[in-house]
Structures are given as structure tokens and as C-alpha cells.
Image 1 (cartoon, one colour):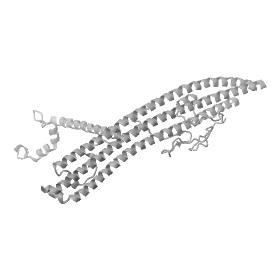
Image 2 (cartoon, one colour; image 1 turned 45 degrees about the vertical axis):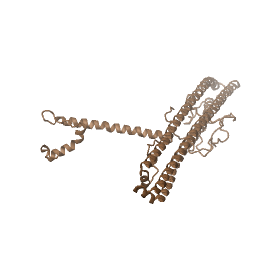
Image 3 (cartoon, one colour; image 1 turned 90 degrees about the vertical axis):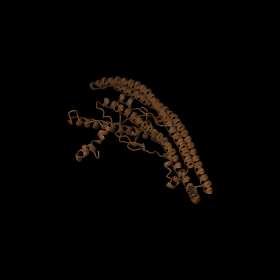
Image 4 (tube, one colour; image 1 turned 180 degrees about the vertical axis):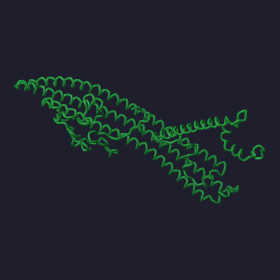
Amino acid sequence: MIGNPFSNAGSFVDHVAKELPQLVYLNFQMLRTKDGKDSRLLLVQRKFADDMSKVSHHIKFEGKIYESELELHTDAFVEYLEDHQLFDSFGLSNDLREIYAETTETQMHCHKFQSAVFECTHQIFELGLKQLSLRIQELNDYNESMTKIEQDFASTSSGLIDQFGEEKNTIFSDLKKHMNKMSRHKNEEVLGELKKLQDTFETHLQKIWFELMRLEDIRSIQIKDLLGVLKQNIQSIVKDFTHNAKGYFSQIREHVNYFILLLKDHVQTHSALNETEAYNQISEQAEAILERLNIAKEMMYNVIDKREDTLIISAWDWYDDLFQQLEQKEFARSRNMILQINTFSDFQLVELSAELSNTAPQEQTEFSFSELQMIKDLSQIWPELGRGQDHGFTGTLPARAADDATGDNLPLLGPKPVSPSPHEPRKALIYTDDTAHVEMDLRPYVRGTTN
């Protein structure tokens, strides 16, 4: 533009400089129409802004993909390293880097070392993704089996509930008839019939209570066996992964040791030759250089050890955390389910008492459930609960469930349950006023799975 007689005006130069990005974008096309008017300029500016917005959106989209990949790599306990990244992370001083670049020979050694290290880190990365896919498959199989157990339990329970509902309606209908007779004239025969109906109802109630507890016991054993298989398979996957990863880290240490030995040999050899000015300089500083190489070797080992420890600890921490939470979740749900079954049983007795006294039964507490609702809410069972206990009834509706983790206030639970985890649980069971549950999020463990 400078020296052009048609562009000496400062305003025109400023205008072109301002519009230069658009000119470059449009491949220096004219912004004016044939008649010299500027009518096309606004349209071009809008098109430029729109296209730049699309580019910006694409960059953001690529950024989300990158973040997703990082999250995936985190789940696999590994990270993708470029060919020089691990070497750069060693934190070597500039003077040592100058030694590596001193001659063609040292440059070749350095290049081979970086390539060998990259191959090992890439193998670790691929190993992590492979074991992640295996873990996902195992968790998918576990979820499918859990769904099958739930469906079988719900199918059997619904039949029992429907049968009990029919028996209950029949008995309550007969009770009303006999209560009407009682209102007109009392006699021993009517009282005997009422007592017989009451005994029949309690027999049916005890039967369904026992059957639901038996189904829970069966389901708890199935879940315990399923968790055992999952634990064994996941443990095998993590064990193989960490064992193979340790092997690759050992190879990296061998490459480091060999690389340092080559550099030491290079320094010691050429310090005695004194053939060039560069070698003379190396000779004068030979001892100091060898010492720095020893320090560099230790620094490399420290970085490698830290990366290896982080990977191994992350994998086993994930394993421990997963099964602690799974077992706590199953324990909490089974505990809550037994509470619900007992509450359901007690409420039926309250309804019977209300029928006999011609009064409305008190409202069920929030955590109790109707017959059909119970089918949806019954879930994981723990084998130690609901087995080998006195299958009687409290005869009263508890106004409040246990609000702590002791289990002292729970009706008909037998001995105080013990946490299934062999270690101190990382997340304690949280019991609200009426419902036992555990706070957890399985998404980090089942990425790619379906609930």
C-alpha cells in the first residue's frame, strides 16, 4: 500500500487494514458492485461473521470431543502421550539437553530413546482402553443379570400379592356381614364365626409374609453370587492390567538406563580424543557431566515411579470403591425392604382391627406401600436378613422407622445386621426418617452401560 498514489489517504489505508481479515477470507475479491456502490459490503460482512461463528462453533465442538476423550482416558487410568511428552516431563536442565544435541551420534541416541519410550507409553495407553472395554462389558452383563433377577422376583411376588388381595377382600366381605348380624343380635355362633375369620386372615397374612421373606432370601443369595462373579472377573481384569502396565514401566526404566549408559560412554570416549573444539569442551567438563547424567537418571526414575504408582493406585482404588458401594447399596436396599414387608404386614392387622371395631384404619406411614406398589419397590436382599427368624407379627403399626444405622428400632429384623464390607465403608449408610438408602453414583464405573 505504501507508495501507491491511490492509497495515500490515511482513511483509506485504515479502512483496508480494518477489513483485511475479510479481504483475506474472500481471497481479495472486490467488495463493490459494478456501479461502484457499497451495497455488497454489508452482505459480505454478515457472511463473514456467520462463517466465523460456524468456525467458532466447530472449535467448541472439537473442544468437547477432546474433553470427552480426556474423561475416557481418566476412566481407563491412562493418558495419551505424544512421542516427546514423557521425555519433556523428566524436567532435565538445558545443559543436559545441549549434551543430547551435541553431535549427530547423541542426537541419534536421543531420538531412539524417545521413540522407544513412546512405544511403551502407547502400549500402556492401549492396554488401559482395552481393560476399560472389558470392565464395561462385565458391568453390562451384571446389569442384565440384575434385571432378570428383578423381573423374576416381581413376577412371583405379584402373583402372591394378587392372591392375598382376593383372599383379603373375601374375608373382609364376610366380616362385614357378620358385623351386621352382631349389630342386630349378639350370640356365640356369630362371635365364633368372627373369630374364625380373624384367624383365617392372620393365617393368610402370615403365609404371604413368610413367602415374601423367602423370596427375598432367594434373591439375596442370587445377588450375592452375582456380585461374587462380578468381583472375581473385575479383579482379574484389573490385576492383569496392572501387571502388564508394570512390565511396560520396567521397559521404560531399561531404556532410560541404556540411554544414560550410551551418553556416558560418549562423554568418556570423546573426552580422551580431543579431536574437536566441541569434544575438548566435553573433556574439560567430563566429570561434572557424568555426575549430572547420574542425577538425570534418578530424576527420570522418579517421574516414571510416580506415574506407575498413580496408575496402579487409581486402578485398585476404583476397584475397592466400586464394590464397597455396590455391597453397601445392596445391604441398604435389603434392609429397607424387610422393613417395608413388616410394615405392610402390620398395616394389614390394623385394617383387620378397624374392620372388627367398625373404625377407619390409621393412614399408612410414608415408607409403607400398597400391595401393587410393593412389587415395584422390592429390591436387593441380604442373605443374613429375613432368614431363620421367628415369623410372627408385632400386631401394631410402627409410627416411625429406625432413624439411625444401629437397627435397634427395626421391627422383626432379628440380630443386628453387620456391614458386609470387610473395611471401613467410605460412604456410610444414610437413613432418613422412613427410608434406608445409600448415596452413590455409579456413572463413573459404568460408562457406556445401560441402567
